[in-house]
Image 1 (cartoon, helix red, strand yellow):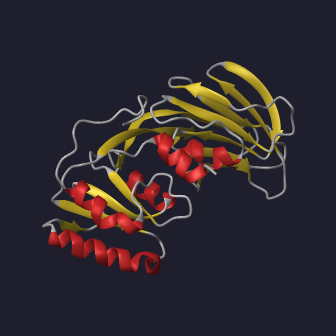
Image 2 (cartoon, one colour):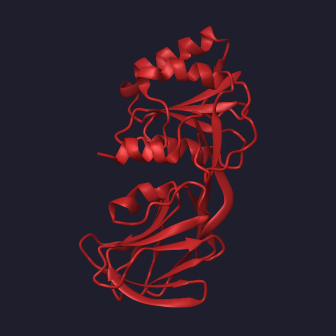
Length: 273
């Protein structure tokens, strides 16, 4: 049974070519990679290069960071990404290592779901970049507070002294946003979450913003630059009075999951007591 909010793409296809993306530390997944290759060969499935454009699916051996890297690499294609969890959290993965062969047998037969996930587009000075998890505006100097002015569309929402601001997608809402007390967005919601990091205010509360409403953030700090970070990578710098605009993008990343895996099930398994 799936969540009524989790939309899916048309029926998945049987797999004949699989690309594999691995954890940055190859020693962590060396045994699993050998097992996967041997199992794929036994099922007549060809293992191809990680960047091969004609792969039917990408299998990730890693955690959420590796999943994000693989999903980003496949933006704009119809190739979905499924994860075998070798990370600390592994919220995006739906296969545990001990069941890898059993679950991949089903995946290779076409028994999986594809869930389209929204992405963010950020714009700074005419430059645009895409994030799958979040766009963060944070102090460029460690230990220095910044002052951010923000608006939704053309509605001014004032200034907040803080350590930063997070704008997260539904998939990113369970990452940095969650650890800062932001709201969890269930997959299927066409919205982003805006959460301040360590705000020096009693009134700076998280906000859920619908698709079509742009988030604008200005650096109003006299002597500290603001870094704009997309999915953990520094992408731009805001000097005083520079700003970044953030919106839900039209591109979607394609997350493949086992048919019985739901957002709520993963939420309870990963974050529950």
